[in-house]
Image 1 (cartoon, rainbow, N blue to C red):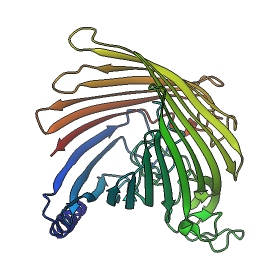
Image 2: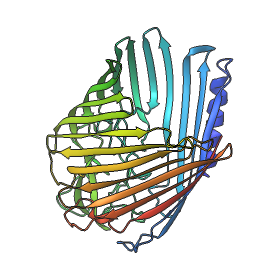
Image 3: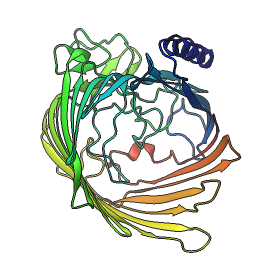
Amino acid sequence: MLLKLVSTTTIIIGLSLASLGSAVAEVSGELILEARYFPETALFSNQEELYSSISAEINYFTSLMGNQDLTLSFTPFVRYDQHDDERTHADVRELLISYASGDWEWRVGVGKVFWGVTESQHLVDIINQTDFVEDIDTEDKLGQPMVNITWLQDWGALNFFVLPYFRERTFAGVNGRLRAPVVVDTDNPEFLTTTTIGFAPAQYESEIETGHVDAAIRLSGTVANFWDYGLYYFNGTAREPELILQNSTDGPVLTPRYNQIHQVGLDLQATLDSWLLKLEAIARSGNPEDYQALVAGFEYTFFDLGQGLDIGVLLEYHHDTRGQSNNAIFQNDLFAGIRLGFNDEQSTELLAGGYLDLDNDSAFFRIEGSRRIGSHFKASVQAQLFDISDVTDPQYFIQQDDYVEFRLGYFF
């Protein structure tokens, strides 16, 4: 039903807007069947071993009023999950009107912006909220209402962002895997605690809550033909919530609290023949504490080792001044990985890597690969393994959530 609704809405909006100009609309998308199998016994009674789901995303793009510099893009997304009601959700990833004139570009609507250069963590990426029910790797993002103005010059670009509405992070439900022992409540239960008055599904430091207007400015460019850089300042609502334990009629739950922060961020990448040198660093002030963090490392690629095979070796180090707290997962960690690119007609790729906590020896490993099948299909597999024995590790609760995920996607 949800798939039919999103598809119908896309067609109606697309036909209506395309009629404003003579340009032919471009439509593409994907339909993905997914199965996650968890071989170990679940920690919590409501969890299952096998989770199946289906997702769809459609990309619609057209120029408006016959003007190639005035365009509209629309990307709705929807997922239905077999067991986890919180993972069954829909979102507008993008609904943007864009206009380009000379050195200036304007974008208004709902969009996605990505910042970052490292493989294992994107510290500097802050504009969009994470769609955490999709995957714990934080790569999937919710659409963000925005006004974005870009000034383009020979030396680079200056971007201004006004973000008039805040999106709350999604979390797995009581029947989902990869969750904390206490569910993060994103609904609206009635609380019985005498200390909780006027409880809302989420708490905010700002009195106007989701209506707080966030802002960011970013300078980016290239120096000496091999250093790519980005430097920004952000003022607004933190995308990562502080989780507060409270009691509800159904037992204890975690309530997300979103604080106001100031953050500066820097990303650097140097391209030196087969070497990529990478750095992401941030400094944040605001509740619950001020801190600094960085991830730095390199990727070295051995090109064309036979049959078109490329092999990339990755090594990255993580540091966070908060230490081993619930909010600092990568406080003193090392990531190592290998990337295989076969450069074949089927676009076969494989990435394998692991994280090691240098303080408590906790580790987790991730393997993901994909291969195109014909012109419209793509198969992918992903495995996640956790080796966490230290009960003080903030990820201890997912120690029995090793899983293998299979995907079959149809692309058009």
